[in-house]
Length: 433
Ligand code: GDP
Ligand code: GDP
Image 1: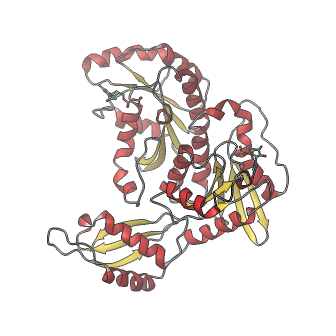
Image 2: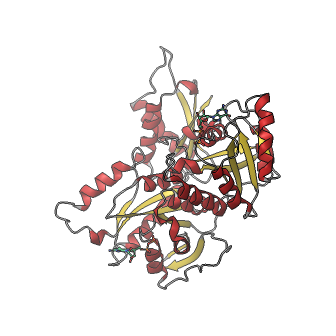
Image 3: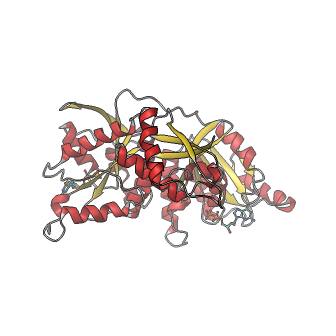
């Protein structure tokens, strides 16, 4: 799926536009249990084109001091990762120095850049907006993110550059290896492939796409997708919070299953959770591999079981996950991680025959019926699994709008208890019958 990145200095209105772009689809996204909304990444569609939107500002704290270097990185990453860039400025402040700096960076890319002059809420501001033409972007659009005026025209032009997204049926499992810098991704890949892979060389302008490696050993065949080597050329980003997240997005997009490497010495951090949520939102299979387990010396007090429980809690409410404690250095449980990824792939492609599904779920609903809504009885007639790439179920019922979230959770738990969906997000929809 193509990515549209929104860049610009703080307070110009990036997140307001982001919310407007993502907002309408939110009800669908929310349909998936346990997914909280976050500001950085979401999907939407316009004129029949599907795309992802990244609000790069969502990763940077809005304090003026940290900020210039962070903005610079933000823009560079947007240039690397996005198909189209929306560069937002604010008519109420006029052109600022920082706007000029960002513009200089963006003029160097040959990706399409749309200058969005925001907060053009009225006629007077329409006139004031003219000054931004001096920045020299042929695609300059006036808009008001608050009222929505102008945003439709901007999107019409932007999605011209978006390639329509088709979920490809992969012939072999696509496994993405993601995680923060230094989690051990390269070491893991090298251990699997049994060779030192070439690190991408530092040549300006080379495409920094993810790397694919074919694996076929010990009865497992899959394609590895990783971004590990690429980092080496971009040391500057290493302290940047959102770097690993941005990097992970495209690898996640291409994958069926995501192996999220966590550094055992650091534990689960906010960036890890951000990557996790993106994979969850995209309905990918997920395996948590806690690497560098050899560094956890005090295994008496920190038993694997205790750490596992604590680690699992961090991913709540989606906790039906494989968690593997491995050490690439000591070659411990590397194959266990591979096996967990393959099992997760199998779980994600699992199709339950309709009759079996209904037998099991009718029994579950008989044990605990949907709660009434204001004295009205809510009943589910039957359930079908939808014919799509990941597990999704439609429950046909008399009053879909009155189904309680708690009941949805109950149904999900029942599906998980009766069929193996470990590591896989489940979508549940209620439809009118
Ligand atoms: P960000 O830091 O770039 O993400 O900016 P925000 O989206 O948080 O917006 C900063 C402020 O500008 C908020 O108070 C918004 O309500 C306001 N704002 C955003 N878009 C518009 C707009 O189109 N018109 C006006 N008048 N205010 C806006
Ligand atoms: P990447 O940035 O995620 O690709 O991480 P690397 O594979 O480059 O590893 C970062 C550092 O962690 C290197 O110095 C590795 O040798 C080290 N490392 C990787 N796996 C392990 C492990 O299981 N245990 C220990 N102690 N160190 C590891």
